[in-house]
Image (cartoon, rainbow, N blue to C red; front, side):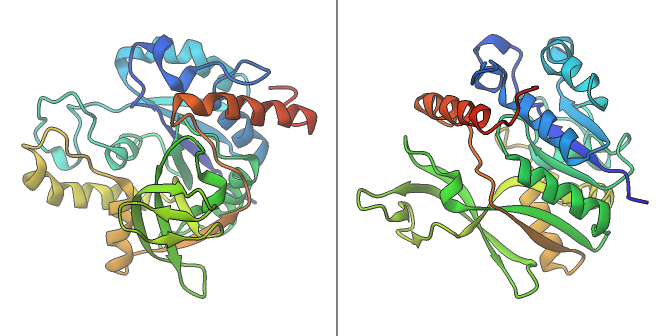
Length: 296
């Protein structure tokens, strides 16, 4: 009997001025947002439940926009990323910026009790990535073995500017050993892929993280523990964020968990730049010709 699996969608970064946000821009022949494709792919990959992390201030708008679509397909739940609710009972700080992805994930601790994947709300991840994540969660994930969907670098680049990517290194058992953040990756005129900040030459098949993780609920305890250490040094920095890759990296270094890299051939895309929109529309239109997403 397969384990129940949940998909956690981090959407609390979406502001309340919905109509102007790229996350809900109607795209492609179906005039749907990329988030609708995420729900569709998750359901077809076999996920049993979807949980959206949102902000309470735009809960109804969000439910009208995408919640109802999800509710018609699969068990759906919602939780709020609140500035007042901090791990370890740390006192809240008045700030506008959310505390980051690790805090967002922790906010779902009371409604997720099974293996789960976590990803961003405003990206297109591709159907194969959801299948790889689901199958890993259903069959392999444990408190000592997490997962990370790894994309080929070339499948995640923009023709319209540089991008920031986490370059993944793994051992012979496909376990993650490090993630190096390269913040200005671009394609040179001769086709070379280069991180313009460091000058490092990269390769088309280098594996990168696009923040698509596979966890067990053990991660909630680890987030709380690390946040208690993070908070004193960062509480006065109103722009500081508590990121999930940092939490996982410390677990790897402390030997409290391994992370298996789940390689996918899927193409990732998002609207990083306004100029990316035509390319995204073209990619979504091509799916129709391939017979994909026709019933979205």
